Length: 336
Image 1 (spheres, rainbow, N blue to C red):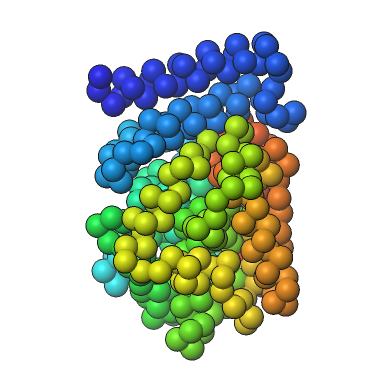
Image 2 (image 1 turned 180 degrees about the horizontal axis):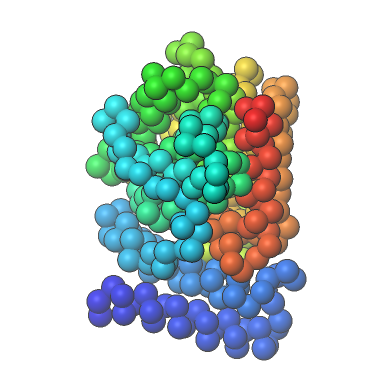
């Protein structure tokens, strides 16, 4: 069957399966609406359809699942731009009636790296998340299309993020007006880019927002196993993703596993994650390490939530709560 047919079949199966499961035992988690639970079931079915396949086939499975364009996109302007050879998109809140044209340039900038296990994902797949961050923070978001594995392995993605950061500064954006952000693998990149900038003695941004960050690619067991019944990922895929991204590099090094890094001297962090996601334990450990290093850390574990729950904005109020936390953080650290 063609991919659209398979996507529709998975969606209908998730809806029907969720209906019968809830009739039998109620919601899987106390706060889950039917729509939220069915959406998680659909993501879980997609993960299992992609699981174990070669990286490029996994990318194709996920690319075929793109949702209809969100109405929120009418509230932002999206513009393609080349940032020193790295393709990227500006996401800028549309001016209110009577707002001066120069207002956009006064906004802080969020440099965003999408998730996708380092092998899939794009600005298209994440455009609603990116737009909502721009609106919540009243910020311009520069979202980069960093090179993906297996075609480009470590440290290609970090190099692309650093190129984009340097490009912003060359455009006259001061580091105090920049916040790094990313979800999942992009959350890893937001942290490893900070580490790379610090190592090279370059000015650091005002802060970073690792969202459900994959901070310990070698981790197994714990919440990786116990939360698999709630979350939509497949624990067995993480080792393959790690190997695909690392190539021949040592995955224990901090530039791949930021949980193992010396964190002293990094700027303010906002860390968001869900109670029911596979990555929960490693994110908790990272927050503990950041606090021990004396960093300014805002840490929010959202009850009942799965990995990247904020992408399901229409189905849970916890999504909007997360965006409001991001917006407040950006305004605080950039003093806007």
